[in-house]
Image (tube, one colour):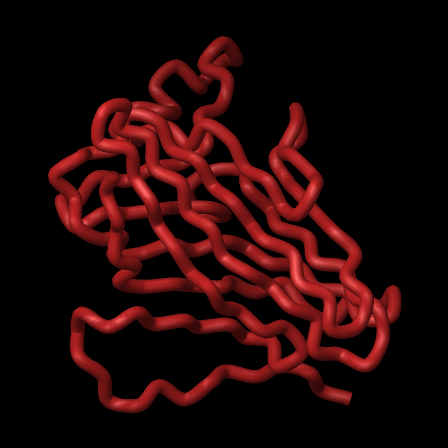
Length: 172
């Protein structure tokens, strides 16, 4: 039984929001990026809905830019900052802005760099990513990618990336 799906992308305006989710059993929508001009804090929120007939578990791996990465229209990249006190990690965060927190439903990323939730059939949970010190002149997120490990009815079915492109930023 193959449950993987890559939606064909129709010809679109290069400024249109693009959602690429490799799982047909997981719906992605209600994508928003809201910034606060005064503080430079940006909040990105994305809804994930279980379309499978049984319970699913959605696990987002967040370690390093390769797992969770954000790039704005000014070329700045953002990731979760990791410890620089270990041998060989002195400049590991150099060149990256900081993702300050990640929530998925009622779960918050703690000392381990992941969040996960179980979703009953048709249930929806929101992935919320907060960034501090975001470039206030930015008008959109060019690339938002997150590694999504999916379990359907307790069976591992995939380890793929959900990618969003051209998310407009609403500054308040």
